[in-house]
Amino acid sequence: MELQINGRAVQVDADPGMPLLWLLRDVLNMTGTKFGCGVAACGACTVRMDGEAVRSCSVPVSAVLGKRIQTIEALGTADKPHALQLAWIAEQVPQCGYCQSGMLMAAAALLDKTPKPTDADIDAAMTNICRCGTYQRIRVAIKRAAGMAPGGGMKKAKA
Image: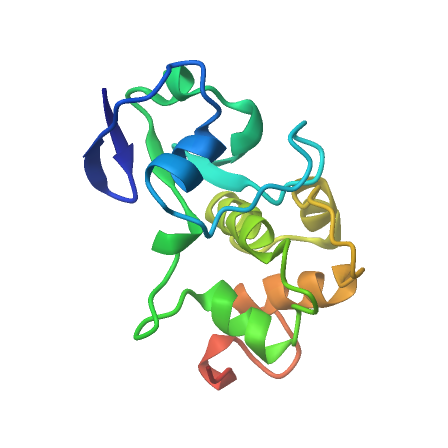
């Protein structure tokens, strides 16, 4: 079957019932998307499907046919990081870092829909779990990426 992953057509031979997470990690060796809980509760496996944040551990491959999938590998590059990646660094969001790829993908989906999110918007969209408890830094980083943080937008953040 052919899937659209990170802007490219990808041919895969996989069981249609296989969770997208395992297709990404085990079949395509795209290990940026993490396994956390396996029941769509923690968000470590969050990717974007047609722009929406989805938990890839609970989405079968058959459900992504004809959909555009974006993983953390395509959020930004070393040469051109996404504004959220720069904000994450500037605000020192990661501690252990395990949840961060899912957090970034959920935040990217939020900013695409709501370019200037309120605290309530962020709280509603960011349902991922961070065991290190960096939620306040995540909120500030999202606002920084949106150009709303004190001290200016992303122009002042350095990688």
